[in-house]
Length: 193
Image 1 (cartoon, rainbow, N blue to C red):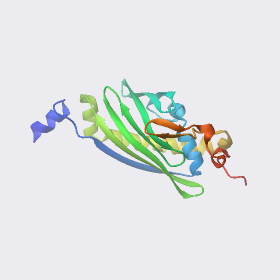
Image 2: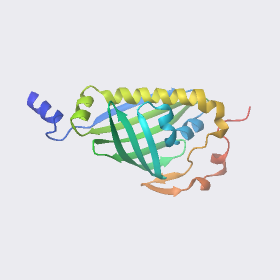
Image 3: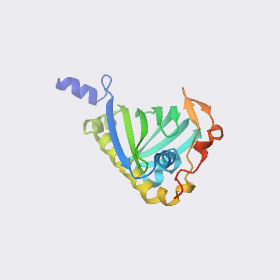
Image 4: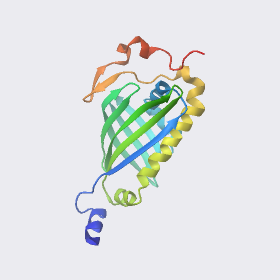
């Protein structure tokens, strides 16, 4: 058994994926939370380990993150995106990949649950060792807290300025561009009051 474990850690055989499920409740309307989440290029401004996010197409993103003293890059493709509901993606990278879904659930008009379900496929010694310690799950939990703080301290203050991507993606293809969204989706994210 020890031999099999060492073999898995040090590169022999195929590592089993790790499932990570985390959620955070954000004190803001679902539309605002979703819109802020779709502004991927802003992630480095509030997430500690994300260095850059380049959106090369509506459905494709290039990521760079700092892991201890080295950097990791990967590409993700959005498979499905439904405004105010969920975003599902697949990724690929030289040191492993993460597939996942983030969904947005209205608990009250001013309270939204963000549920993140990830399947992490580590590749390489460093990633597999970190996987043993569940480092990725702790990182995801921390980054979700950073997202919540960003929404509640910055996004709420300028809610009328936060415009997310309101299009729809199915099977990795844009099926409805943002300007084709129904009028109710193009209205302000915070009710007048």
